[in-house]
Structures are given as structure tokens and as C-alpha cells.
Image (cartoon, rainbow, N blue to C red):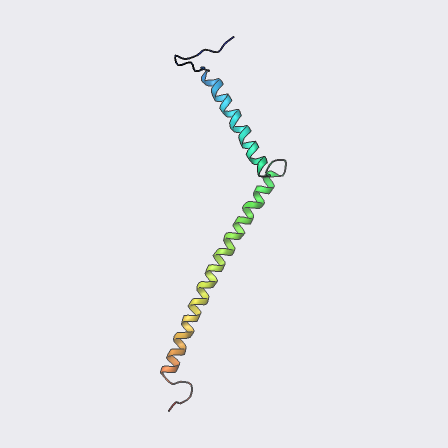
Length: 96
């Protein structure tokens, strides 16, 4: 049996059969992509959870590092201002 063809010579398939072919191709492509990056098998879900946990830790460390840098800069500026005020008011010793 030959499949029906359109006016331009293309093969026509029923919509349900076409959707089934697309679904099967998408699933096979997804499996192949996961296998290529090493995320196939029984422990794939655990590996993905570990990767997400690692990314969360990296984000936390980055946020903490930025906060620490801001605190250090703010503290340095405050100390510089206090030192300037102390020098201006001649609090520490007398100068000629």
C-alpha cells in the first residue's frame, strides 16, 4: 500500500499518526541528549538534584562575597572619615 500524496507530491499522514511520530522523536532526542551529557540511568534524578544544590551554594557564596565586600568598603570609609575628623579636631596629641 502506498501512502496518499498531496498535489505537490508530498506524503500525507493522518494527524494522530504525525503527532505520535513527533512525540516519539522528541522523547528519543531528549534521551539521547541526556545520555550525551551523562545524565541517563537510575541516578540521573539524584545527579540533577546535586547540580541544583551546587548552583544554590554558588549563588549563596557569590551573594555573601558581595555583601562582605560592601561591608568592608563601608567600614573603610567610616574609619577614614573618623580619622579625618580626629586629625581635623587635633584629638590625638598637639601639633605646632
